Length: 323
Image (cartoon, rainbow, N blue to C red; front, side, top):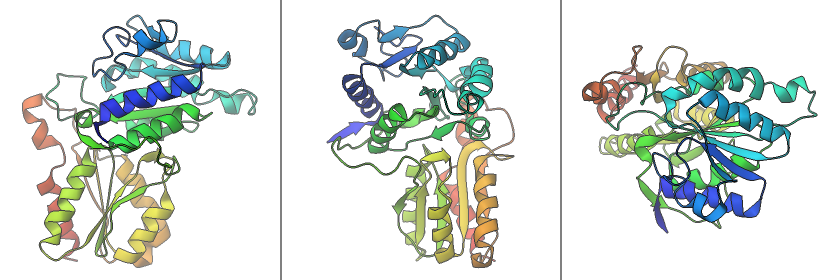
C-alpha cells in the first residue's frame, strides 16, 4: 500500500492507541484540527479528548505534564508544533526526562515520546526550520529517532511508543507528503539499527531524514559514471549503529556524511570520529561532511542554497576519489 509519511504516522498512532489504552497524545492543536501537519487527524474524534489532549500554548507545560503522566503509568506522546519551539521545553527534556531513570536507579521509567517536525525545505518563516538533533543526541538518557520513509515512520513510531526509554522522534517535515510503500504487518528492523538503502562497493554515503532520497539520487547519478555508492540511513541518531557503518566503510574505503544541520559538532562529526577510530586503516581518503552552514537558518528564499543538495553531495563524492 502506497501512503504518505504523515499518514503512516497517523496509522502508527492509531494502532498504538488501540492496542494500549495507556497511550495518550498531548500537544497544541492536535484535537479537532489534527495538528499543523494533520498527523493526528481524526484521532480526537475516535478516541476522545481525554486521550487526545489539546494543550495550551506552552511547550514546557506539555513535556512537564507528560513526565507526570508517565510517572503515573501512562505512555504519553507529545507533539511539538515546530522544531524551533522545542527549546522552551529543554529544561524538562534534558534535566528531568533524560535523567529520571538514572536518578531513581532504574526504579522509575519514563516512556515519553516527543514528536518534533524538523528541517527545512518548505519555505517556512523564522524558527520553523531548525535541526536540533545534536542537542538531544548529546544528552545521555534519550533515544533519538528519525524516519525517512512511510514504512520507517510507522515502524519506528510504534517501537518508540512501546519503549520504556524517553524518545525524541524527529519527523522531516518536507517528507510528510512523500509517498512510499507501507506494510503494517511487516516485521520491523530493530529500532537502533541503520538501514542500507542502496548497496554499493566504492564509497559509503551516510545520512538520515529528508536527505535520504537525495542520497539515493546521488548514488544513481554516480552510477552513470561507473561509481557504486552505498547509501546508509541512520534511522537512530542515538544510539548510532556503528557496526553497519564501519562494516560498509571497511568494504568501500571511503565515507561521505550528509545532514541538514550545521556542521560544527553535528552528527556528521560523531560518525566521522567513530569511523576514524574503528576503521582508520580501511580509509583510502579523508572523511568528508556535507551539511548546512554554520549560520542561523536563512530566509526561505535562500534555504535551497543553504541545504545540502544533490550537486553539493556529488561534489563531495568526486573529491573523495581525487585522493
